Image (cartoon, rainbow, N blue to C red):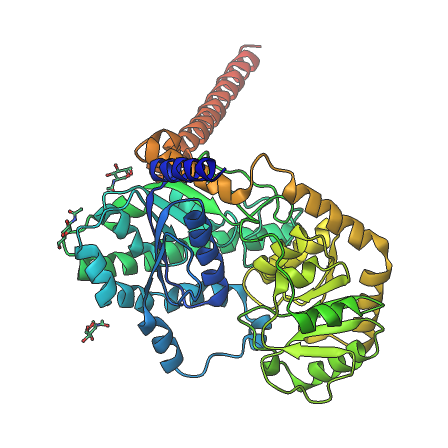
Length: 516
Ligand SMILES: *[C@@H]1O[C@H](CO)[C@@H](O)[C@H](O)[C@H]1NC(C)=O
Ligand SMILES: *[C@@H]1O[C@H](CO)[C@@H](O)[C@H](O)[C@H]1NC(C)=O
Ligand SMILES: *[C@@H]1O[C@H](CO)[C@@H](O)[C@H](O)[C@H]1NC(C)=O
């Protein structure tokens, strides 16, 4: 028996050493939700036998075998030193145009910090090699230099689904007639006004990208690496795009062949709940409502008036409530409410007594709730949350309400509807069956495609030719100009000709009349 085990062990080691790649992940954003996802990907890949190095703003306390972190502590220090963080609740009414301009202006100093960090410099100057480099796509375009430096294929990772910023980089078609921008809260069946808005937003966002973001990152790149190629040679060279999306949650949209949906990869088999939580949930005769606004919104920053309404309505429910609250105390906490600064979210959602998730509509939370089949009441605030909430509504596994418009009666009614009408639970279970109905697990899919592009030395055959066309060719502007110009010319000629014919005729008839 022992001999067989040892033999199997050796076999496994052999298999791993054949399959295991050296991967570098560049996931440096100082936002928890981005880090959680990127880090889950890195750990998932390490667990599948790869040697993974991750450049990150946070530190992993429990690294698995094969995982190494290059922790850039300056990033969080910089974020904290840059003063008081804005109250995210005030962003609810921020114009999408402002959000679109705001996002890319915060990341250039971050990119500089990474290129200037001693740890990253040491890594780049070492004789280490990597088989592939995975870079998060989120306004850190100049980081696409790193795979070039290591002569390794570039893999882009997006914590959201296909979106304009990534579509541009792989020429993925996204028709604004039915695909609303991620920052807009439109459905897929848009009114004339919404399509007009989406179209103008589309052009404005592209202007910001091409006129500000890309040139800015090209400048940063050449400040630190004067001999690097122009950014446009690097950032359009992605071999693979890993998207954190899935049709069970997102709208179905086109994907070019090297875009792969791995949404749901971060959801792991549920772990045991800690003793106190387990008791709390096991003993909830009427079930449990889980309330968390994610990792970026600070719950104690919510307006006092809204807090009072929520306390009153939740306190009057028969269910028990778990509320993720950022302080030690919650004033006027009702007896059915338990607060904590952190909850094992997936394990709570997986508990049979969990009946509802009150969420901000963040994508991670939405994927987890869909994976575990729990209905949602969403209070979307900013970024992609409104769009996610729109989808939650459209897919029918929850209700979205505008946070600034919450009233006591409105909240009461919404809770009753989503808890008492069985259709929300049924739709949540349906979405859950869809997200799990896949040939292989999403992390294994990521693993397969990463190995694929390494095996095929960048897999340039997956690249669509549209990527190499100038704008006028891509949109056939020359052909359109030719066709419409031709039609216009023809019409002009015809009208000239008909005028001439008419003129000759009238001259002829005049001369006839004279003769008569
Ligand atoms: C780069 O790092 C050095 C020290 O390592 C520091 O003196 C310098 O100010 C940094 N530059 C930028 C732009 O952060
Ligand atoms: C990398 O360099 C170190 C010395 O700096 C050397 O000991 C090691 O063998 C080198 N590794 C490879 C793969 O070249
Ligand atoms: C683009 O990617 C391919 C495949 O990884 C690589 O061979 C090529 O050198 C890259 N080109 C640039 C400019 O990085």
